Length: 96
Image (tube, rainbow, N blue to C red; front, side):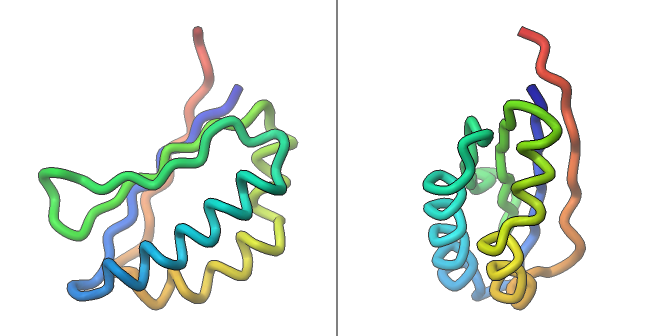
């Protein structure tokens, strides 16, 4: 199992737009990626305009399929328009 935590900081006033794009992406991931175990957008309670995406994939092929999917690529423009900086991506190995 492979985990991913993506930390995303967005511009002031862009939360509604960002969340709308991400809701569409999340629905597509859940409907079209059988190797995806979890894809959850969360919002920080302590850092303004900061979100974390919690992701779990069955294996490396599932993670690769996610990054190459049409729905992921299509969401890129809408997400990019909201960003306050480059996302921070952390990759994790499943343990138990």
